[in-house]
Amino acid sequence: MDLRSRLADVDARISDAARSAGRDPSGITRIVVTKFHPVGLVEELAALGVAHVGENRQQELTAKRADYAGAPLTWHFIGQAQTNKARAVRRAADAVHSVDRTRLADALHAADGGDGGVLDVLVQVNLTDDAGRGGVDAAGVAELAEHIAGACPSLRLRGVMGVAPLDEPPADAFARLALCADTVRGIVPDADWISAGMTGDFAEAIAAGATHLRIGSAITGPRPVHG
Image (cartoon, rainbow, N blue to C red; front, side, top):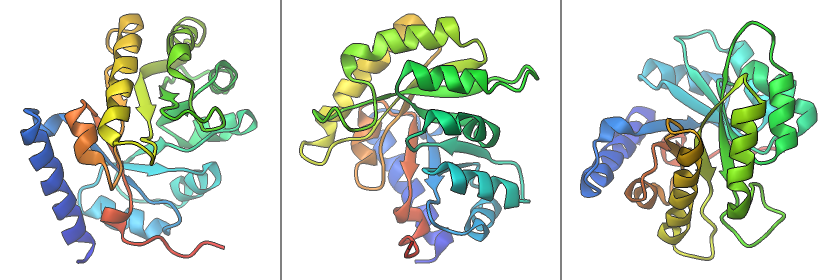
């Protein structure tokens, strides 16, 4: 299939999964992850009506946003961020899905350009038992959410993000993420984003309440070989 066909196929599957879950497909935002693909693919996606794109690496996000010259897009940063890259991430991203510690929240807030702009952020939750993976554990979600809401006024807490581990059914992991989302909404009532679901598990994520899906290869095709 070509790009248009792959996009239409994924959108049809999203709609089917939403209806199966008793949800309105219009309440789900599809983010196309263009990792390692050239900016030309972003331009093709925009021409097909895509409004949201995601990147895992700050350097790639920065470069693509600088090179892109098409219709306005919302740029999502979904990878792990180092605090020393916070200024560059903030400059290039409209939303950061991977805030997993207070130091990173503070660094993103400190990178505020003083122009009154607000950066959308999500608390990334570690859904595995591996403390070395990105994300705060479930027990730390409330504390991090309270810090963002209370100490970082240039950040707007929008919800939670998680990646399902490979060693358990994704539905089980997404159920835990939904509980974390409830915790965050108890602190910031309108923080109703749940960023979950990728190419292999977005139907389960939709069933668990995901509002934002991060889908790459099912739409973009195989990633180019990256040296």
